[in-house]
Amino acid sequence: MQPTRRLFLHVSLAVCTLLPLYSVAAENNSWSFGIIADTQWKDMEAPFYGTSIHVIDAINAEMIRHKVDLVIQVGDLVDKPSAAGFQMRAAHNKALGKAGIRFYPVRGNHDSKGEAEVAQFKLAFPGLPGTPEGGGSSPDLPGAAGLTYSFTHKGGKFICLDTFPIIAREGKNGKAYTVSDYLPWIEAELKKNDHRFAFVFAHKNLLGQSHKDNLFSSDKENQDSNPEMQNSFFACLQRYGVKYFFSGHDHIYNRSKIKSPDGKSEITQLICGSAAHKFYSPKEPFLERETPIFQEVKHVGFIIARVKDNQVNFEYYSTKPFGEEPKKPKWKLTDSFSFTTN
Ligand SMILES: [Fe+2]
Image (cartoon, rainbow, N blue to C red):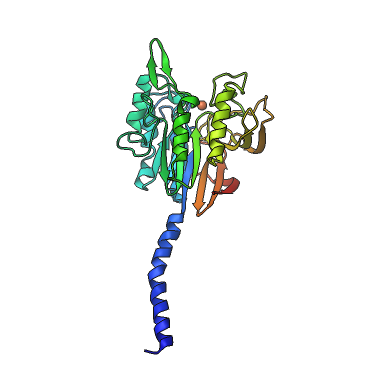
């Protein structure tokens, strides 16, 4: 064989061998996940049972069309916690399940009351991370498994915080864990060498637009309550390069940069909009440590995050309110932004 021809054959063979490997690698490097906000619904009777079944179905159809790997809900799955409500919310994820898309809920204030409601939630959403069959991790705190949890997916780490009543307290609603209770576990999770980037999710906001209670306190007057807890949380996220925090509760889509009370750390907060009938309006006071970037009120929406190599692109799609009847709405790309992971 002539040397030139031999070289050509070697190169061709090498290309043929390498091509499939490259395409698999490229596929693995390009993936997406979705975020859905509050799905509480006013009607407690069948077929709703307090959850926005028609909005959920329409958003899930989009999640499937966008081929996301997983969907996270930032709380308030139902209007009032009940077995029927949680079961109905879970039942409307059947289409996701069929498409191989896993659903990760974190509870909101409307999903919580006491121990009985925790059990109803766990029954409707079994096998979440931190439980024996769920993989991932939960803080080593009684009852927290599968409620506050973290998991990794293709280089991303997802940390979901439940700050609502989990364990029984005599004569009162259950006891909730605080961000301070969770902080050693959050830090340990972020310290692990098992991810390239991480996001944190919870129902309540760092600073709300309408709601002035927040992740750190139910105090509606002072958004700087528990400053040490706030500073430690912000500092921890900043130390480990967490750039985005996602929340619900406000039924407003809002993107802003927020500094810790001591001004030393900063994170971008996404309040993820509404997947329900309910809408709030922003109201004073707004703190100076928040820098607004983009806001949309009184729309139903959802977020798609596309990950490709070191780039994460976020897209927020929205439409006018609906939900009384089944509908296939026209969704508009309303906000988009991106960041590069380290
Ligand atoms: Fe809420």
